[in-house]
Structure formats: structure tokens, C-alpha cells
Length: 117
Image (tube, rainbow, N blue to C red; front, side, top):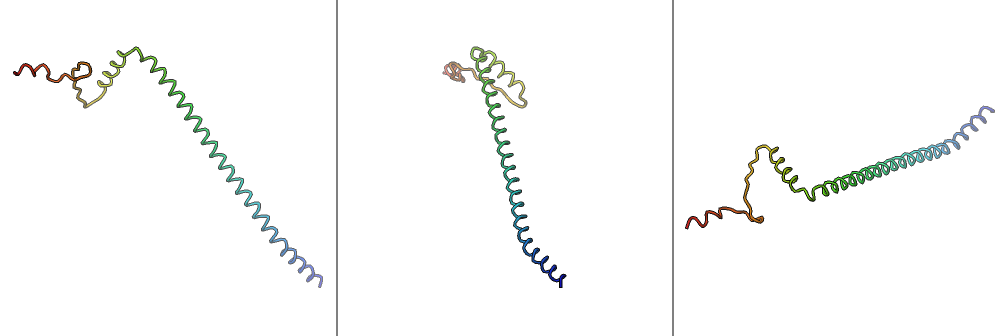
């Protein structure tokens, strides 16, 4: 009889404790998932901020470089001509045709028009 009472007590305790454990386990699992999601979100935010900061630094560097280059080229049109010609020399399979101009107006066969009459 004592064994039966002990068995009933054990089964009763298990019947009470099992749902409580399942609730506790689900709560712990949920908290772990929330902590993992929060950490992943923080990593994404920090990565985006770092990329933004790097892009700003690149843009500032480019702006400074452009300012320096612009200042150095203000009174230096000869360098721009040399650069243009040197770039033409480096191109392959290109034909360059020079068209004489007068005030940015191409002078195409203007000398021959009056000669034919």
C-alpha cells in the first residue's frame, strides 16, 4: 500500500512539474531567440554605420583631391593639352583627325570654295 501511495505521489508530482517545465523551457528558448535576434540586428546596424562612415571618408578624400587638382589646373591649360595628347597616344586602333578651327568654328574646305569659281 505504501508503494502505491508513493507511486501516486510521484505521478502527481510529475503531472504537475512537466507542464511547468515545458513553460519554463519555452520561456528560456524564446529569450535566447530574442537575444540572438537583437545581437544580429546590432551587428547589422554597426556594419551599416561603419560602411556609411567609410563612404563619407572616401567622399571627403575625393572632394579634397578634386579641389587640389582643380586649383592646380586653373592656370595650366598646357598640361591639359599634353594630357589629352598623351591619352590619344595610348589608345590603340583609333584614328585621330584634326579639324582646324577658328573661334571653335570648324574650317572645312573654306579655302577651296572661292577657288572653284
